[in-house]
Length: 249
Image 1 (cartoon, one colour):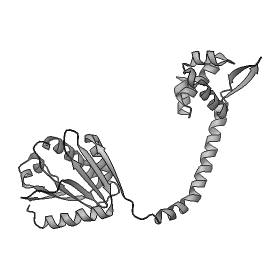
Image 2 (cartoon, rainbow, N blue to C red):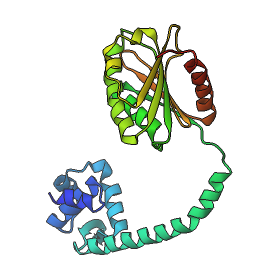
Image 3 (cartoon, one colour):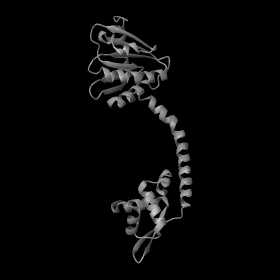
Image 4 (cartoon, rainbow, N blue to C red):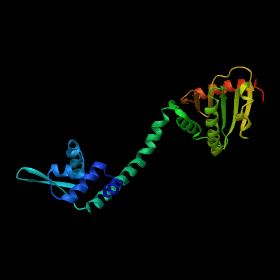
């Protein structure tokens, strides 16, 4: 019980156990501390040194033998006050350096990165990151390839993705192969999705929003690749616009 409370105050699990043990047994050599706290002997000196550094534990020598003892619990208040002071100084330093960091960032140019997301939960995380930062004025675009083998998993995912889209308030346009027309997914399309179809293959399962592109590979465990690149997004948008003119409602 005490250990959990001490962890909330910033001590590690081992530090909390050792400090409580020392409060219970008083001045002691290492052996009884290990036995009382349940901490591994291989870690005890490292933990004791950290507690000494924080001012929670001190030591004395008795006939060349080192004894450790816990400082009064009121020392915790002093420790927390010191943490608050350090945090305040850190915040002041941050506010001073922030303008310089922002200037430095301006020289870096466009941010480009990519991330890989595994499984349905990972894919939802990727989709949420795709949407992050978008507004009601932004329009999403997507290509979707209907494949009966993966339809059930894809249907569940896209229905969940609609909840995210609804939260951001975007309008979306999509292009799919003709085989999707008769599926239950199409019958449940929300009003914010405008769909067209083509009689030829589409390039893949691709979602585009602003400067991000999400590529999805549907299989037993789906994979999503989220690309943060304005150049890549613009390229996919141009291709989408070209296909959109050929597609039919």
